[in-house]
Amino acid sequence: MDPNHPVSAIPGVILKPLSRHCDARGWLLELFRCDELPEQNVPRMTYVSETVAGVVRGPHEHTEQSDYFAFLGPGDFVLHLWDARTESSAQGVHETHYVGESNPMAAIIPPGVVHGYKNISDKPGWVFNAPNRLYAGPGKREQVDEIRHENRDGHPYIIP
Image (cartoon, rainbow, N blue to C red; front, side):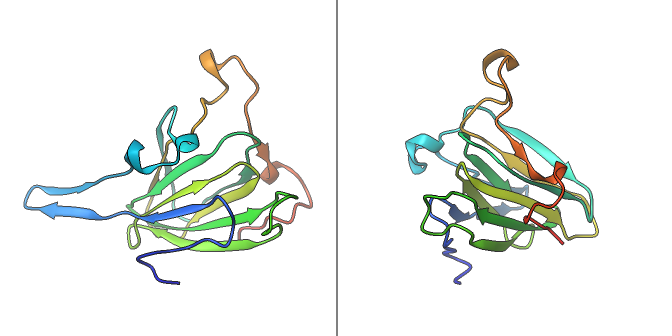
């Protein structure tokens, strides 16, 4: 796989390398432009999370929401993706991508693709997310769109 043009075998997953523009003041990294995103993936909210060294987040999936993750550092992650969609040509495919400080990357993850990541660094790592749905809907009055596999025994989505 060409790291400058990564491709996923899972339909609907979009991977985009992120470029740091550096000068004497520091750096700037453009996370997304709405004119470069498919209309269905334009964000409705944003948040940043910090994951400490060695910790796993997920695996989980959404029934309607697409996530737009940006892994920029500090820290590096291994991102796991499983296509759980019965109608998909890639059903059952499991991919891993190494992303973060050493490989800044954005990933759009569509509904039905189980995902999770692990901080594989010796320091905390930050992940930006700009999903195309509001968490718990407008006013946080709706059911959360998540199927949390990490809370179930016997699931096949293991992040070592």
